[in-house]
Amino acid sequence: MEARRYRIDFGYEGTAFSGSQRQPGLRTVQGVLEEALGRLAGTAVRAVLAGRTDAGVHAVGQVASCDLRWRHDAGTLRRALQAWLPEDVIVYQAALAPEGFHARRWAIDREYRYRIWLGRRPPLFLRRFVWVFPGDLDIAALQRAARRFLGSHDFRSFAGHGLGGPWATEPRIRTITLSEWHVTEPDIERHEGEATLLEYRVRANGFLPQMVRTMVATMVRIGIGAAPPEWIDTLLAVHDRRLAPPPAPPNGLVLWRVRYAEDVAREGSDVSQDGSA
Image (cartoon, rainbow, N blue to C red):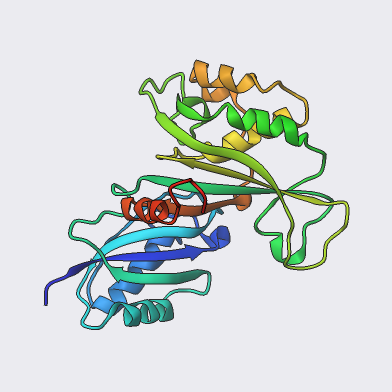
């Protein structure tokens, strides 16, 4: 039988992974996914991931595309694939995809979320998923800083893996459509009453390596009063990675969602003509 194109929606805890992209000799998300798919197909299978995540970064909205010879329905594929995957990877859905579907190229935008725990220690079940920050942060300053990222900018000053300037002369333009902070309440267990859980939400048409984590680290510097919000304008203008702070820890970051044209169309149909949900 001929191979058919499938879309796989899945998530993972990134703690024990050396990133999402396949790397020889290292445990990666793409590596364990392709290994499981290969066991089902009886031959090597290559998968394309919608978004790249660094070592230690998590995902609840990752998407993969692959060509697979599979005789059963998509629901059975999801269950069979889950059976071969390790416990730190979970498959939400497997479905036949349109011809030519490409998880990365067809994506319209991606959303990441970063959580910071302001307190002495995080709740037991959140400790691998937050940056434990020992001091206080000015929420209003964080919001002012976040708004300065909106729009299209050259993000070389925030890019890792050698993509930042001044030696990197190729522009790295990305368009940010969502950039905001939220104060959230962990409902998973008891925690110290004086603690605060912050969540940064950012959506763009694409991201560079370490970009979100460096943006967060920059805003934290502003949140403690070490720099004004206008510092972000300067960093965006100079294209020099050396002038921005080191990236925030990876464990606070989650790839939250990848959106495609059909997702956006579906969201639009859920909104009435007066704009209400």
